Structures are given as C-alpha cells and as structure tokens.
Image (cartoon, rainbow over all chains, first blue to last red):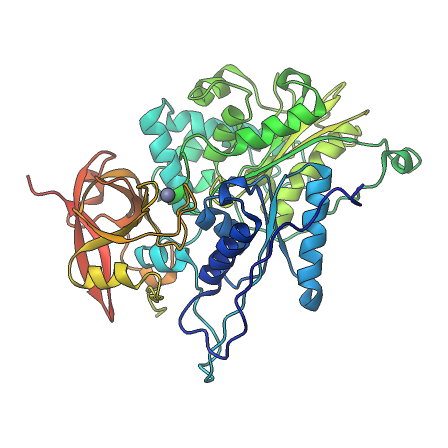
Length: 383
Length: 134
Ligand SMILES: [Zn+2]
C-alpha cells in the first residue's frame, strides 16, 4: 500500500547552536516550515498535511496549523522519543499513500539556552501570550462567544438550546451507566441553572468525570469471526482549521462540514441513510452547530430543527442515545470515545432499554478545541 | 493567590508589546498580499509570504462577539467576575481576544464601537478596549 506511493521532495535545516535566544519552539517550527517548502519549490498553500512532535505548547499541532494558515486534511503529533523523526516520515507516507492528504510537512525543532535558566514554566504559545492575560483560559469562553455570535447572526432561543440538554437527559434516563441516570430535566431546570459564561448555563456545560473507553479495530474479514456482529467503518473524514475561536475562519460555520462531507462521500451514503447521530456535545451549542454543519439541516435553522424533530432514542432522529457527554459524563478523552462506543452498541443491538430498531448506519462525530478540529465516522452493520 | 497569566514577549512578538507600552497598537501586514496578520507570525497565513513589516493601527474597532464570565475562567481572575471577554474586530480587519472595560457588562453588545485602552500590569502593557467616546 505504501511502497512507492510517496517520496521526500524537500528538506530544511537550521544548524545546531549552543544558544537560540528567546525564540520559541513554535516560532522555530514555522521558520523550518518556510525553508522546507522553499527547498521543494512549492508554497505552503500546497500543503494539506502536518506532522509535528510535542512542542510543550498546549495543542501544539493544531496551533501550528493555525499559525501556518493551513487547511489540513491530516494532522498528527508524534511522540516516539529518539525515533520521532523517522516515525513522522512514516506517518506522512501512510497518510499520502492512503489518500488522506496529498502533501504533508514533518517539522521538528528544539530551543536551547547556553546558561541554565531554570526549568521552563512558560507555555510558549499564542494562547498564553494573547488570550490568557485577558481571562481567555479553558474552553467555556470560546463556546460562549460562538453562541453569542450565532444568536446574533441567526435565530436561536435559550429554550431551543435547552431542548438539546433535556432530550439527551431523557436518553440518559434509559442508560443506567449515565451519571445523571434517573434525574430527568426540564427546559426550566436548564434555564434556571446558574449562568456561567453568557449565554451558557451550568446545565448546558459538560460535567467532568473519570472513566475510560476502548475500541478494537481489525480487518472486516477477521471481525466476521469474532464474538459480536462486525461494525464496518464505512467512512472517515477529518478537518482542522484553528485552535482559538478568535482566529476561526468563520465563527458560526464550523469545520464539521468538510469532515462530515468527506466521511459521507467515502461511505457513499447520504444523511437520510443514518439512523443515529452520536455527536460530540461539550455544550448545547456544539450539538446545534454540528447538526447544521454536518448537513442534517440548513445553516441557521438548528434551533427550529430541534423543535420540529424528536432527538430522543425513541424519536424520529435519535441523537446521543447514551445521554451524550452532557448527561452521560465527560471522562476526559474517553468522553469523546463514548460517542463511538454507543454507536457500536446500538449497531450491534447491545443497548437495551434504548434500542433503535433496524438501525443500519450511524454518524459519529468528534470535535476538538473550539470547533476547530473535526473528525467524522460513518459506522454500519454491513460493508 | 494564583498569579495572573501575563505575556512573555519573544523577538517575534516584541514590537506588539513595545507598541502597547507606548499606548499604540501595532500589527504586521504582508508585503506580498496586503493581509494584516495577527497574532505575530513569520509567515502570512493567507499567501505564505515572509515579509511582514509592522504598521500602526488606528485603535478603533467593534465588538465581534463576547461573553460575560460570571464565574472566573482562571483562578487568578477570582473576585473580578463578572468581566467581559471579547473578540474585537479592528477597523483594519484583524481580530483579537481582549476585555471590554469602562462599561457595565450588561451594556456590552455585538457591534459596539470600541477603542484600545492600555493597562500597565507589571512589566507589560495589556491591550483592552473601552467604548468609543461619542
Ligand atoms: Zn500574504
């Protein structure tokens, strides 16, 4: 699959120095990006893949996408110690051979001070420099600013946002594993919970929990001979556009769209062909944006859409039948994985008390950062 | 008490912070395509150009979006709530994360005309915005 399908086309190098001054790792990575594309005789505009290592900056790989202005179809961060450089090239070769991206930059950089200057405590990222001094820490404020702007551009009422939380809580009440099992919710409950960051109330924001989730992926041939009905991966799509909401290409039209479009195109099915939406829900607004940008309703109509449709497990368009992270709980990274495990459970008919009858396909979606990193999956019951 | 996070200027970003200390707003502009670049970069995120000279901004802009933090977003901000975190769109185009000060949070709205206001904190000068004098 990989052999002969990709080649190294350019290199860049900043020779070793004993002291690199005040320059940060991410700034050095951007310089080496320029040198490398120039060596190959291409422009950064021709690059749609990026592999970096751990930069010490929060979300370093995604921040590099933002800093370089990429619209990347493949982004990864590799942490293989001394083998990182070769592992990065191997990943890029895989990505190119498989068609996930066409041209992939692999970047490495390390800063050095001649004198011991103490252990580095400074997060050398644009976020630390240009957002955190203003209180721009954590994810809440970014999603709140998206919700404010969305409500300014389109019609969305607090009641419509609250409906998402209420219907997912109904689902959680059919899932004994959910942290809020047995605690039904009303729109009034949501809107009378404390305001945390305008316009988002406490019950529109996920509750951090502890837990774990795992998924085993194998060949469909092998899966056919294992204990449960295979769940083929019919489509995948990824799109990364920004880290901070401030620099989003468009604050109210998210990168969910290119990711979902790619997944549906690969699967060769349409939106009407999926019977479950298992989509990332760190906040109520996240679900609404995802419904629109994944193509289940027109732009600007998600508020009306959730009034006209029933998102409960026994409704006409089941969304997050496990309760979503809003009502199931957000166990760190495992929270996002819970959307995959629930979809698999439903497709295998292993979700008692909330079974979607005759389910053939599910749309599973993960969202990272502040709507800037999106990965979609289409899972099914047959190839 | 947790210390307030403050910027640590690098050679790349220093012109921005040096400008702020003089009560001025400076940003880069791509020599090749004219795009105004913020935050500071070595390469233009639109065309990849590597000549990005600094220019002074007027300091005027509008609130693009905002939120009112009713709970602290960081331990160092405890006791300051409610405060406004906003994205301001400068008249020249770039957007930046900031605070809106000099106005009750409930009077802030999207589209509000604002002007850069500077606050010295320790060794640095932060760029905030206040309502434009009418
Ligand atoms: Zn340019």
